[in-house]
Length: 238
Image 1 (tube, one colour):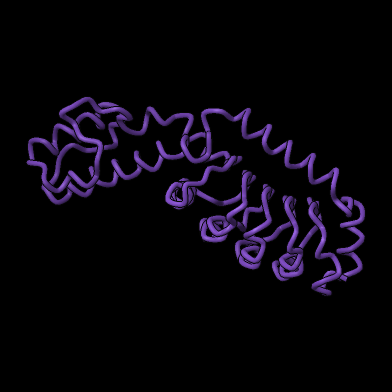
Image 2 (cartoon, helix red, strand yellow):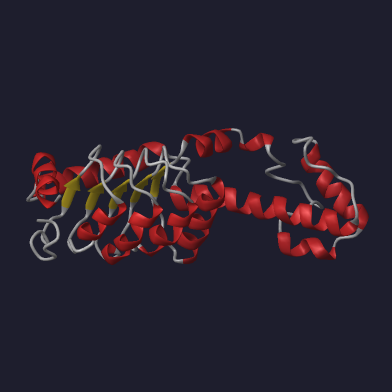
């Protein structure tokens, strides 16, 4: 049934949570060109399954992918092209802070904001952010990675020492080239981490949850397919 591209094109809400899916099954969902809310949590899909969802870039507003461990950082480009996406649920996936920072940078470039529910490892990292590096260095210490190559050895050591005081795993020693690269890495990570609050509103989790609930309610009220029906559709298509 799902293999008929136009049969369910008017669906706005689809919940397939906990229904085992193959990556290839998702291609049928991609033809539901009015779909606003999609629940694919605990379905066993991986990153490859998400590529086709880019066809929903002009309609999909809420996407739940929780507890799919085969989804990793390679899914980030797909999330970035979903222009209407307002809430993304990815706890229980293998997406890392590297991927989260990459997504935040792209969203900021496009002047977009999004609610997000993060993997536990990312939540733990952000909860302990003040233990990773010096978040707010006082002048004359720098915060711009672009300024690092012009620093003297003394200035490099002074900057790295400030971060070392927070995290003793950061060494304020080495060759100039090593210290330059180390400080650049720290400041780029810092910039990416601080961007998360702006793009994802992580300082106001309640707002993100409320936004998610409103989207779900709207989809459920106006949808022409229920969770039970969506299970029946999938069974008929196998």
